[in-house]
Image (tube, rainbow, N blue to C red; front, top):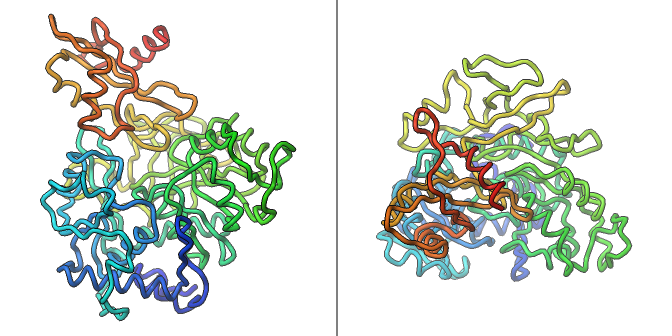
Length: 513
């Protein structure tokens, strides 16, 4: 790997295509299609020429609303090759949420799969409808004119739910993506013999960085699957000789609970599992992030399937991963591991580093840390106070240099790997004509880790049922954000300054359940 690979994403892809022309880079699990490195590069060029024919130029944002597919990955790289900014849109969002994301990003074009056409039909933005990349780009050439690109040019604008309401556009550069791919590759010892499974949604940086960009950087291969299915998962592992996959704790729990899985890792010590393909011996480990894996789930998963679980920590603002446990016996269950290339410290409220073992805010610095929030100087300045990115997450470091997450940003809920900020749901509930006051918290859930629960005070004389309020939320918010339970209370506990005491609500919940 030459130093030139650090310049920009176009250079990286073209260099890998030249080095590995006939090697398979991308497999489409849904339909069996495959692309060599050279064929993938050619497909990206055709898609890039299609974007240019639609007036897209360097610096323009292109919103991507697609299912997990080879086309999604091709669309990302097509944007990057001409210096456009890819704006992945969470396909679980409702129309008004999508409208905010594509509008705030100032997108010039929306690439949308036909299955999502209905939810964006009233969004006033030029659209290209994808069903199949080959059809969409038919007639466009495989030769692409040069575009002047630098490592600091913006490559992705991805929206993170905001603690103060509206989501913020997180700007990641070509250099950020390449740096994180290099850090992950080197820390986990990936090479050209690896085959990574992209089963996490490509509208999150986890799938983009951990199993797609890392595969490219390592001259490895990636298999993209439409969605996670516990009943099919181990067959995919075996069929494609997967060596590693990205996951969240909920996926591991679902695999443990699934009674339908017929193919299990042959390293398993559990005799009840029938092995259909010995090639699944290639599996090295599962990479897990987004939320801590309960120690018991980790232990049972490794014991049942003979597959290590490598926990890590990161945010969209750090491209994806900032830490990982070592991929060996030196792991510490319950820890998010050690920094894989960026600097990481624990600060107190005065921004001074705290001693080992003491709680404080996690701060980051390094080449994988994002450029800033799109058109939000105030939020960017606050986040980068003192030259460090302040995550808002609370944690500590032990004497061996392993980090632990003790609490998360504000009151953020993580449901099955999706980040949910209660403020957004609170504000919506306050618009309901029957509601006097409302507050949302995360409550424990065996499968998803956390679920959303709402506490509501009704106006005098007003009536509303739990179903009424849940359906009201579903009309405006993605389903994963909507409360699964609504509790009617006489008052919402408040502190001396009027701040809602959500920890008090957690106590009330424990008494109600």
